[in-house]
Amino acid sequence: MIVILKPNSEQERIDRLMQHFKDMGLAIHYSQGENTTIFGLVGDTTKLDEGDIMAYDVVERVQRVSEPFKAVNRKFHPEDTVIEVAGRKIGAGYFNVMAGPCSVESEAQIVEVAEAVKKAGASFLRGGAFKPRTSPYSFQGLEAEGLKLLLEAKRQTGLPIVTEIMSEKHLDLFADVDIIQLGARNMQNFMLLKELGASGKPILLKRGLSATMEEFLMAAEYIFAGGNTNVILCERGIRTFEKMIRNNLDISAVPLAKTLSHLPIIIDPSHAAGRRDMVQPLSRAAIAAGADGLIIEAHNDPKHALCDGAQSLDLPQFDTVMADIKRRAAFEGREMMPL
Image (cartoon, rainbow, N blue to C red; front, side, top):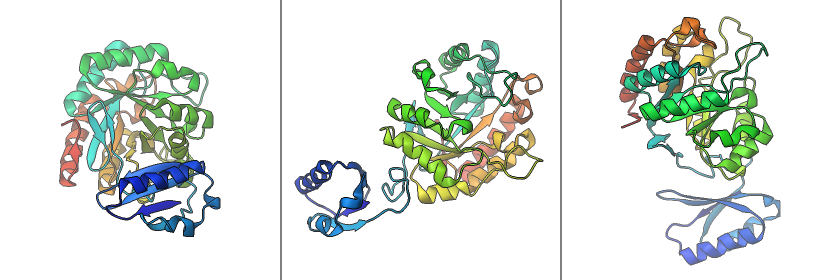
């Protein structure tokens, strides 16, 4: 349920109404825009009588929300949310590119890539330390050592880092990570979602391979329910009957997510198709659709990459793609981060 307040209402009366809802055991998401102030009520709202609420003179109208996701719902928070990380703004017209290798392989590799993607204009360094792989015999990442190497690359280049977590048991290892990525395979790992909700860290939430948009937003709702509002959605392609590409990029997820939710959403063109030759056209589509950024795989030697080399751009290719992204983002009126 949402409660829309009258403009210029006295704060004392607003506080009295808030206390009334708190006494009923409801959580309140307070959203104040330029022209409207909204209470988003979360909990058992079936016991609320709309007539009783309208009796408060600060209330303009009351509206029940039918969707199961509440806190991430745009009805609760009409203005776009902007996530601030290490001096970068994500969402609401700001455009970020996160780039780096699928997996961290050595200090020399990750530092070389970090320096190159920063020079090209990327605002975050991505890299996998813990790697979920379909085969148990595939390279699983350097794990804790990989995190140390990412932090070393951050120290040398100043780029904030994005990396994937696979278990709540590892959360302490991610204390200095700027954005924790929750991969597609873990989108409905509810215990991990709850722990990330309690962490307060910025979370990059990837859509599951077969997840509906409602399931995707409900995963974000889990994180919000734990008290963490720093969530960035990531569309990375869904599994369909098509076999010529790795996944199908659901470009409609961008305008749909922006209609349903106030959260920023970025696109992963690398995982979407699994082919480096499609990264640039899919990036163009993402910008045109209104995405708030991209996460792209770039490697200094893709032919010998230990993970996902086929979808990774080499560094000269990344330079070319970034130049194109900058032009198109500027044409669409986006502000590239960092400034």
